[in-house]
Length: 339
Image (cartoon, rainbow, N blue to C red; front, side, top):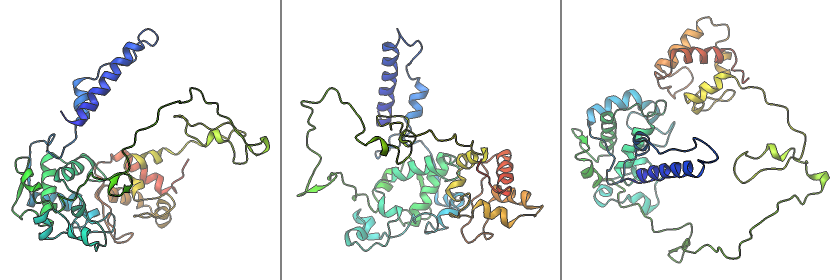
């Protein structure tokens, strides 16, 4: 049983217990988790490859998927540093033989690439399958995930160019990971004479049973920073006292801001400031009065492109519906009002 399964079952028991305790007062609160819900939690791929689905993918197939879905952010050979830290680089044949990246030991690595850091190939498979591509996570099939991982491993000279990675041979690949022996759990929050500092036992004696909270500030200073109640989160143990007149209700945000968040636009674009791509208001300014701008921008969002705003390409956003594309384009060209 994987750790996620154990957690899911514990959650199911807690739900059932809650239903029993609340039965007399709160009808219908809590229930047992269904097998399908437990299965939805149990999605991790562990270092021993428990949870790894069957499948396979070749380096050649991985190259095709990479060019269409990955290269725009990571570079053709996983070397790009424009958007994210490079995936490939910094490892040697000697590292593959020893399982420890020499650049770490020597301390001469200018930056840490993915293949320098990761110790378990299962971690790479799991992350790619769950989180990539950035603009459409979980859209890769198991076979395409094997293929993309095979391409990355080939770039790092861990597997040959004609390799077909699968659930049957991935354990053999683990034996060639450059930093497979680089993981350690022999440390705490702070190293004290070679020993962790986290072995103490918490003191639970003579604890107070009641605590009264209050402000020691004089009345004239209590609202010096505005209404504290509006500056703290509304859940959890910490709440601010009401120390001033309530603020005026905020204006309702524009619906397009939710579309930005839903489709990950804000990862590369700001409303009024450039991030990786141009600010939306700069886009509106450039195309002001251009009657063909609306259709042109819609095509660029769907198909991707590069060169109009610099060297960093925009990956295709095929997962965004036509209705959402049209709504975003109209909002951008209108000046991107926030409410």
